[in-house]
Amino acid sequence: MAKAKKIDKTPPGFQVIESEGMTWINVSKPTTNTLKILQKRYPFFLDIDLGDCLPPFQRPKLLERNDYLFMVLLYPTYDRQEKTVRPVEVDFFVGRDFVVTSHVEMLEPLVQLARDCIRDDHACDLRLGADPPTMMFNILHELLVSVFPILTRMTNDILLAERQIFDESGHNTIRSILRIKSNIVQCRQAMQGHKMVIRKFVQRGQKLFAMDNMDIYYEDLIGHTKEIWDYLENDKDTISAVYDSHTSLVTHNTSQASQRLAALALIIFPTTLIAAIFAMGAENMPIKGHPYDFEIMLALVLVTMLGTISFLKWKRWL
Image 1 (tube, helix red, strand yellow):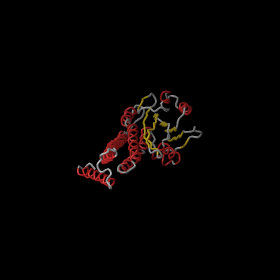
Image 2 (cartoon, rainbow, N blue to C red; image 1 turned 90 degrees about the vertical axis):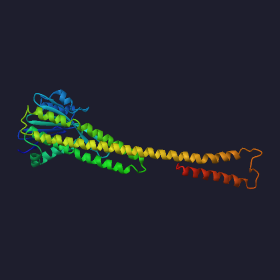
Image 3 (cartoon, helix red, strand yellow; image 1 turned 30 degrees about the vertical axis):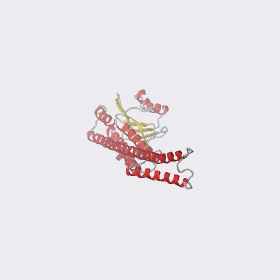
Image 4 (cartoon, rainbow, N blue to C red; image 1 turned 45 degrees about the vertical axis):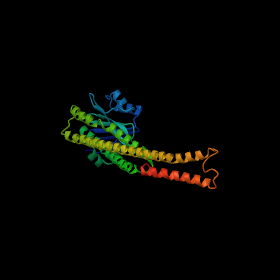
């Protein structure tokens, strides 16, 4: 492969690599102005496709045009500070001698791949390719590989949540569980359309460029998407089980607390009743006026309390 190079005077956010008649342009955080610059270079790009490169997010899809294929895929990214996952849209324009990638949010694996190709010619030879199918395969492979560390983080978060179930910090535990459930949903949303879109790319790409036995490589990509989906299915079932366990434990603890409060009320009620009877002030009140009337009433209250406690323990209500 010929020496890869960055084109001089590229607009902000553009990373341009040219090699053996092939061009890869990676556009980070595109704006209306940068997309107009891109359209000047490729005037056959349709306005509707360029408009899809701007928010809001598009669904995963592949559209066949006269001179290129337009493809939209979503990839999950992990925010380490918030510990949350969100999908990032990547738009692909694939023609006979070019590949253009565009992403509104910074997608580090894609930006880093372009940096490596600009900085190191040998890395560019190994990690890209001399034709659109090979270049697309390597880019898609790099993006899919970047998903696996996110799955590992989510699995570790699930294991941590499992250990926190029996801790006293219930509020923090339920927040962690709900955050993990949300992260899994976001990952599933990002990955659910990959298999269909990649298969369409292999089928329709043959009209623009020779695939040259690339089917087996793209089947490998589809295998990666299935593996990722299986991980997500397993994590979904696991976190649901953790959530059910935590909910059951909270319900059990609440039931026990209610039972203890009911037992305490049952202990206090007879003693309160006895005290209320002796406080009536009736003329012929028994014990009243006895030299040890206070001690007798106090003993009666204590005996009633101990008897109630013994009864509750015998019934195993306490």
